[in-house]
Image (cartoon, rainbow, N blue to C red; front, side):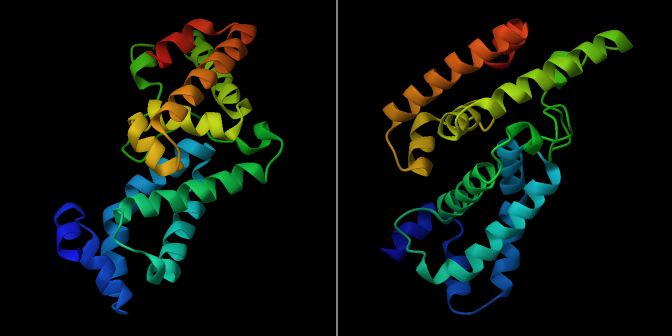
Length: 207
């Protein structure tokens, strides 16, 4: 079974080495996944410092829990589940959502781009730039206002660009359930943005 899984999981040999106590394998796994895990956590907590701490915690938990890993699923999936649980706990620990959201969707992401770049790349006028910042802040607050299970589904499908099937695997649910969560999240976010007067920005972001 291990050989078959190794054909589909490029991390398995390193994971098995780490399970044998070869700690250098952890360095290789971190090198492979830290960039993606940081991006994943950032898109869930919207704060660079928090995302970096959560990313470190993901690998700490993976290191101490690797003995429990079984190759019935890919290591990356297991790693993302750890990240997702940490993000969920992090968000739940902060009941005042706006206090938790100190980053910005317009901040530079790990790949050097800003999420508003496609919308605002041609904007040069200071007044227009300020207005766009206001709109992005409104969108950010709208996302933060969503129940976590709905926001997670929306972020994973829209920002992380995962399929409903991939999200269902990470969330331990069904693709249909993910579809319903995304639909409900869009409804709530649309209502929030309409009340904030920025409904057109929502339409662009969710295109």
